[in-house]
Amino acid sequence: MRDYLEFEKPLREIEEKIEKLAAAGSPKHSVQEELRKLKTRLAQEEVELYSKITPWQRTQLARHAQRPSVLDYVNSFCRDFQELHGDRAFADDRAIVGGFARFNDQSIMIIGHQKGRTLKERMERNFGMPNPEGYRKALRLMRLAEKFRRPIITFIDTPGAYPGIGAEERGQAEAIARNLFVMSRLAVPIISVVIGEGGSGGALALGVADRVLMLEHSIYSVISPEGCAAILWDDPAKVPDAAATLKMTAEDLYKLGVIDEVIPEPAGGAHRDPDTAAKRIAKSFTTHLSHLMDLTPEQLLATRDEKYRKMGVVLELTVQKI
Amino acid sequence: MAWFKKQKGNGPPTSPRSKSVEGMWLKCNHCREIVYRKEVDRNNKVCPKCEYHFPISVSERIALLTDLGTFKEWDANVEPSDPLEFTDSRSYRDRLKSQQEKTGRKDALVIGEGTINGRRAVLAVFDFGFMGGSMGSVVGEKFCRAAEKAKAGNLPLVLVTTSGGARMQEGILSLMQMARTSAAAAKLGEARVPFVCILADPTFGGVTASIAMLGDVIIAEPKALIGFAGPRVIEQTIKQQLPDEFQRAEFLRDHGMVDMIVERKHLKESLSTLLSHLS
Image (tube, rainbow over all chains, first blue to last red; front, side, top):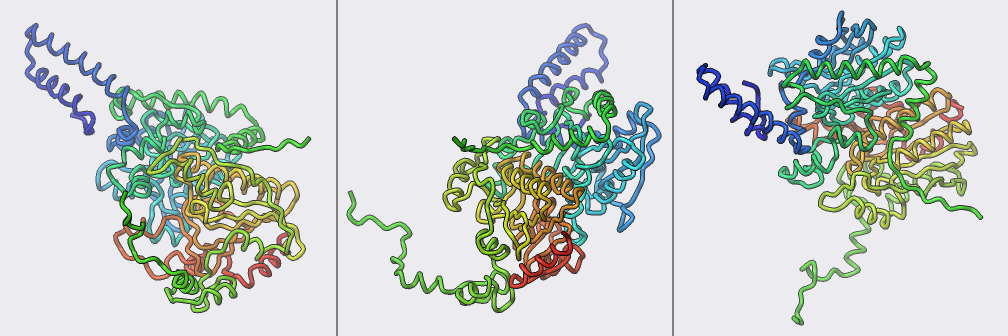
């Protein structure tokens, strides 16, 4: 049985019935007929449920414990992954993983947040919340990729950069700022994909790219809906409202012009069918990489520069001189 | 109609005298001592007891750093819009309107050009009074323009920060300003144009995690609170009390995060000397 979220309860009930009937294994025609009906109903309910999914429900999907991670995807569509460790200054932050891998016969650099699945693994990986050394490891690997002219693909999935004493002492802000600064001018193609939670500056620190993609049920926001509800409403019951108001779904970001593509997920989310999700991501990478690899470094930088220079909405009254 | 309608506020009417007496004294944000306001004002808004540097306004900051009458503001008419149609207890549009009325400014960053001891420089100064100096699209846009003009004219860029971070009401677009402004700083760096940051109290969140930490040289004002995560968030996360003087300028200097701490009375001279080394 899979892990159900609260709002997926109607599906759970149907699936339980199906499992019971199937377990009984009766060859009777009426039972088989009933099973067939239930399966149709399940599919219909699923389509219905996910067609009117709210931003807060999406947030829960984006944070789903079973959601595939960067390492799952790399193992599914890359070969020869060589994980590289450490920032050469302080430590190896396990909330970020990175290394060379082969994708479609092309050697690339993969970097991503890794939350971990079991409680033990989650603790080891600090729930995907990097410390400065994580960002500095990522930066070191990106510079390595640039040196050997390898494209970079980053996977974003973090609640945010870790807010701790050590993180502040070692310059969390500087580490994030430095990544934004360097990524904006790295002379190799960069693709970022938000696969789960894009938590503010801690996500963006791996997300300055030529193409920014998002999985359909992932989210990307300047602040978590919980944080926003606490600050602006001072009321935890307003979390779902905050999730909607912040416009943090893939669809919202696409409309706002912040991302380049929404990658559709299998019914019920990537965790329901990781292979299909991986295939769709890989297909999207192939398309974008082939375009980006055709550009000269100068063209690449000019296009990236223009992309970010335009990001934002302002009004300006211009007074014409007569 | 009731003739005995209660006055709002319920308390006894405050006499003008008590109000002015109250205004004569000030409680220091750092040492919590009560200090004489005039003495603070005479002292560049620095606490006479503990040397804490009180926040100063944008015009006071510009007057402090530039030669008298040389500052010319640019692009004061760039205005925020409301791309998310954001509403919490109040709509973002409403908030903007009241902040604009209060400050006489369209948004939280002032940019322009002036001279510092005769040396031309581009300035960008955050206004904490405008929605906590938060960075949205207008702040991002104006910082980029300041950086571009600095680059075009080969003039040093001096940034003064006081900010709570990214502006929540512009959602993901405010987050993107971190990338946008950092990219502008990177191009300035490639052109070898000096970029100096002065961090004043307080500087937090998305502003620290972008342009504030990207200066060729970073100066902090004494006792200024500077950090990525706010102290309350950290306390709630780690469930421990934070050490004394955590995230103060001196803490950052001791951890290697800022180049120097300069008292306000020496700030212009230090900046001027520094710029002479850089340009």
